[in-house]
Length: 113
Length: 112
Image (cartoon, rainbow over all chains, first blue to last red; front, side, top):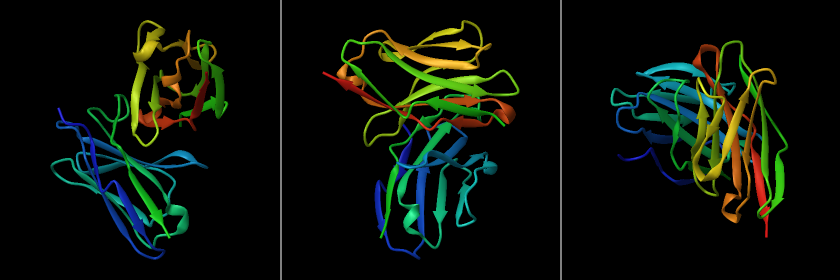
C-alpha cells in the first residue's frame, strides 16, 4: 500500500507570492491533517479535513487555507507569503479522525526569500 | 481542550544507557496517547500507542511507554540506547472532540 505522498518536496518562493501544496493520503483514508514544523515553534496544527469538510482548524491567520477533494486528496494554500512561513509542512492521513494513528508524508520544505 | 507537555526539549544519553522521555497530558475524557519518532528530513512515524486495556505498551525498536492515569503521564523508555535512536520524539494525545494534539518534541542525542 502506498504511503502518504506530498508534492512538491521542496519549494522556494519570494515574499508576497502564494503557494499551493498537495497531499495524497493512503488509499481508504478520508481524514487528512496538515502541520507546520519550524525549529522555534515545533509542530503546529494547521487544519484537518474529513470527507471534504474542514473538521478542525488551528490558530493560523486566514492566509492559510485548505481543501479536500472527493478522492480525499488535499491541498493547502498560503497567500501573501511572509519570511516566517518558511517551514516544513507535513501532511498526515488516518482512517478515523483524531482517535487513530496518523500516517505522515515526508513533508514539503518551503523557503520564503 | 486536551494538551501535551514534553519535559525537556533536548535529552542526551550515552550509548547503552537508559532512555527516558517525559510526556504529561491533560484531557477531560479518557485519552488515546501516541509516541512518534522523526528522523532527519523525514515525516513522523508511529512508535507506539495506548488506547485502552494494558497500561504498559510496547512499540517498535525496543521502546515502551506506561500510561499512568493518576499522574497524567505517558513517559517513553528504552533500556539501552543505540546510536540509531538519535532523532526527535513527539508525544500526542487525542481526547476532547477526538482532536489530536502534539507536544513540542524532544530531541534525543546518543553519545558514543
